[in-house]
Amino acid sequence: MTSTQNGDKTTYLDALIVGAGFSGLYMLHQLREAGFTTRVFEAADNVGGTWYWNRYPGARCDVESIYYNYTFSEELLDEWTWSSKYAEQPEILSYINYVADKFDLRKDIQFKTRVQTAVFDEKTNRWNVQLSNGESVSAQYFITAVGCLSASNVPKFKGLENFKGEWYHTGLWPHEGVDFKGKHVGVIGTGSSGIQAIPVIAQKAEHLTVFQRTPQYSIPAHNEANDPEYLKEVRENFSDIRRKMRQSLVGIPISPGEKSALEVTEAERNKTFEEAWKKGGLLAFSYAYNDLTLSPEANETVASFIREKIREIVKDPETAEKLLPDYFYATKRPIIDTNYFETYNRKNVSLIDVKKAPIEEITADGVKTTDKEYELDMIVFATGFDAMTGPLFKMDIRGRGGVSLKEKWENGAATRTYLGIGTAGFPNMFMLTGPESPSVLSNMMVSIEQHVEWVSDCINYMREQNKGIIEVDEPSEIVWSKQCREIADATLFTKTDSWYMGANIEEKARGFQIYLGGVGPYREICDEVAKKGYEGFTLKTTEEKLGI
Ligand code: N01
Image 1: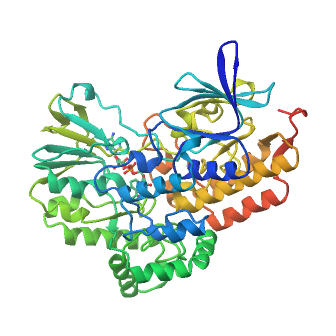
Image 2: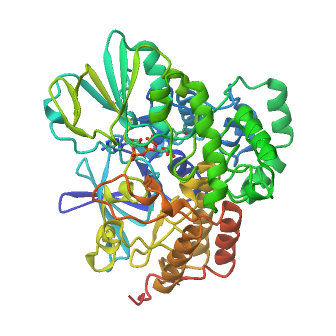
Image 3: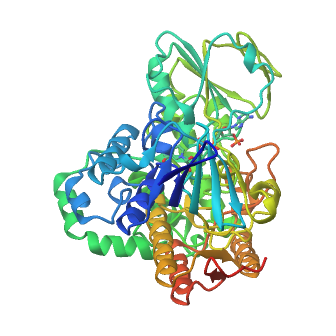
């Protein structure tokens, strides 16, 4: 509904959703089906979220495709076939487009429109939202579906503006593609994006120079075409698979090993690790034993095994040494690759250790480290994202008393949420896969579906109970945040500088913002909260005043 007052055009909605990725699309579908007037605002010109922007060469998912899709519609499950074990970005983007068309979602999505400010109006108990095209929206519910890794980070290198060649960030890749033929290309960064892009760029470029700050553990993905018989079997057993995914720790129906890595002989351990290397995949190593992310000694067993593999693969011993990681395995996102270490055996690839000789500046002609200047035609920044809070802080979100989310969370230093879904002082605001939920340490599809269903159940409940305002109680978020930190502190995750810790962004405070208790237990907690009438939240009619 749109009304005009004093020349201002304001659209009135029950719910406004920010972002048309996997979470925003499903949220729209759920709320619209329940009869709420709902609209999605999306900065891009099409659906897809992370899979719209991250179209760098080699981009594919590291969760097996059979587990990385929506599970809410049996019909959709029947209709879609994934061609390979780990789907490539174009195939995932086609899937998202297919879903948008199948459920006729586009008619309620406004593309090329950013949400700039969202301010909770305490008089009307509604969110006043300003859009980049100058329009205003008034919504009862403000739902962020902005993803955890959507604020690309190009480090503030001195002199970038002087570079005469082309430069790109993997997370903002041009739609028309990039031609590397005959070019001297530099890739800065060796996280999941860099490690996927490097082997593909190396095949096309005249020369590739990789600027590596932290060497990474990476294991083979062993990607392959999906066997139709296997897919048939998966489809026949999918109810059971879905149940297991939901009850599991990370949204993938596999259980961690039951033994400690230290209670078996070295020979037995090496046999297990050898099998994991042959099998490949995200959990092959981290789930081999039950204490690899808990005990430094146990972790070292897997770390040294992978280091040995790197030495075996990379022929030049000096290059191999530079590639050996020394942080705790899996405390940065484990990486799976296709021919990553093998790429360093190519004649047209060189590896520069920028921890030893840091990048001083980008010059007109390339990258200058404290050692040397490297002439380049093109630079690819595979330098990651301002994760978790970054996408939220791109909007100016203000709750009660005009306090901004950024101020409340002290720019990320004091992030506090209840269940990763809401935060005190910001009534009727829901964050899908927000900080302090399992989010990025789970199969995002499982976490997205769980959050969307929980939020839509909650909004339906509010309507049934004739309530208009829901707000997190401060004590509940204090307890939840503390619990998140305690679980993380008992692991090795907080001992490593990673984007999980906010350590990749210079000005960002360190803090672990992911619930590590597992998606199964997390779902039970969320269900219990709902069953108890949304315990930990205060619900009021719009006539009642909520205490601050
Ligand atoms: O980003 P990253 P990403 N000078 O932050 C380096 C998901 N994902 O885009 O480690 C020099 O992991 C930085 O070095 P260091 C997945 O969850 C999934 O690769 O900070 N180097 C690092 O090497 C993943 O974890 C998929 O020392 C600098 C790299 O840049 C997340 O997205 C695919 C630097 C950044 O690595 C992010 O991955 C892709 C500087 N100033 C991504 N600043 C799949 O599903 C940063 N670096 C497979």
